[in-house]
Structures are given as structure tokens and as C-alpha cells.
Length: 357
Image (cartoon, rainbow, N blue to C red):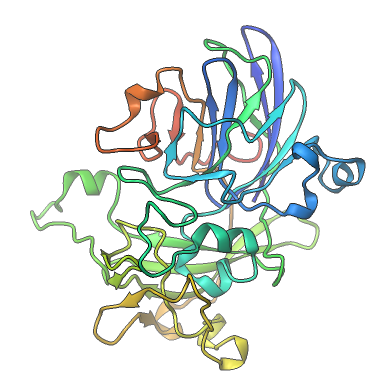
């Protein structure tokens, strides 16, 4: 998705503007001497100028002053790092396009990772590698979200109020297929997870096979006035063994690749000529441990012949305070987890944090 964001410091009257590509997460972070932004996403290197500064041709493409791609060098997985250096700097009144990706891309390798070099780098995980040592590490105690950045806002200081305006939020299409997909998870989370049991006293179950995943495609009107989500297929998230040999479910590791045998399309039809998916090294070391493999909901049962208008938003948007260390869990390493929101924003999941917000 693309998001154009503008921010203002009400104490020093600075004005800052940003654009972001996002399927999931964007976060702004203020460091001790400046305001910075953590953003996670995919970077199209062909659009990036030296030091992130865009040339005239690039500005004509999307109308912004800067471009920050999401790569293994510009994203972190699940935490805000108070010691991180800015990946790019911007002045008051400038605009920036920022790419971000969903941490659920592993739900469907063929549709959401394959053919996109940046996402392939982020999700690459060889057999025997630990979560901490893979190319895009996921550290103990960290959250689940991919965040891109940080971005330095020149001149912003602690105690300033940073206003951020999102001017655009659009899909980021796969450079190979020209299509964009996402997923929706039906699971027990949030309040249900904290409470732990249903009204009748029975526990909420959060293991593989109990959570439904819907893979959907982003569809736009030809004039770009409306964005829709059209479901493609559904399956229940399986129990798996990850490349490091650990047992994984949906809840405890979003970086695991769900090893679908075929690229499933609309109405149950198989894409890629009906041939099995060829998983390259770094994507072929996850094993489903459930009897019968991954369980799919048949097209007739799923009744997926419909589409709904979408109102995309950024799940995570935050300005980190100076005392970031106060928000670091004792079990966490590397920084503060992206999961709990706080007075600085964060994982709010508010639909208002979208275009026009």
C-alpha cells in the first residue's frame, strides 16, 4: 500500500510530510536529538536515488521528495530499536514514499513472496538457522510486526508534538506478477487471548488447525477510486516444524513459511499450470506435522464469490519517546516490542490511521 503522510511539530512549528507503501506496518520513532521513523516494507531499488534522495524522474513517478524501500537493511522484525541510526532523513515540508510489507507474507509464498526480491530477502530462512541468525532476525521477546526505518525528521526535538498526515495509501504490486495479495486471520486474539476462556468456561484454543486463513486479492477500479478485497481461497493454519527444528503454530512465529504444495487460485483452480510450487533454498525447510497436511475449505463451502470495499490503514504508527528503555520487556532483546501500544502510539490497529488520517 502507499501512504502519504504529513507531520507537524506544534512547539517548533515544523511541518513534515511522508508517503508510505504498506501492507501492514508503519512506525515513527523519536530519538534523543531528532524525530525518527521506523517503517517496514519492500524496496524497489530502481526508484531509489543516492542516499534516498530522488531525482526529477523519480519525483514525477510518485510526486514525493524521498523514497525509502523496505529491505533487510531498512526493516526490523517486531521491535523498535532505540539505538538504530536513521535510514533516511527528511526536512520540514518534504514528502517521502515508504514501502512496508505484511508479516503474514509467509501465508502464501507463491502469491506474496515469490518474484519480489526484497520480500524474498526478508523471509529467507535456511535449515539449521535460528530466528536470531537468519538474514532478517527475529529476536527473543520481540513482537510480530515488520517495521521500516527509522526516518529522521530534521529539526524535531524531544517534547515536540509531531503531527503526521497520511495523504495516500495504495497497494504495492508484485514486480513480477503485477498483482497484490493479503490475508485475513480468524483467530482468538486480543481480549480473548488475555481472558483465556469463553463464557461457558471452556478455554480458547490457539493451536494449528483452529485458525482460518483467507487469502485475498487487492482489486482496484480502473479509475483508482475504489479498492476491493476479493477472497481467493481459505485454509486452516497447520502445525509445523520450522527450519530451526522448533514446533510452530500461527501464533508464535509469523516468519514461518506455510508450505502449500500448489498455487491455489479462484474457485479451487490451480495456477502455474497445475504444477507443484518449486520452493528454492531458504523457503523449503518447513514441514507440516498434521495428519493429511494442510486442510483447505472447498470453494462450495467457503462461498467466496464476492468482494468487499477496503479501507486500508497502517496497523502500527508511533513516535517513540526518549525513555524507550522503559518499554522494553525483561525477556526482550534489541528494543521494545511492537505488540503493545502506548502513549506514543504503536500497534493501535485503528482504521483512522489511513488515507486522510
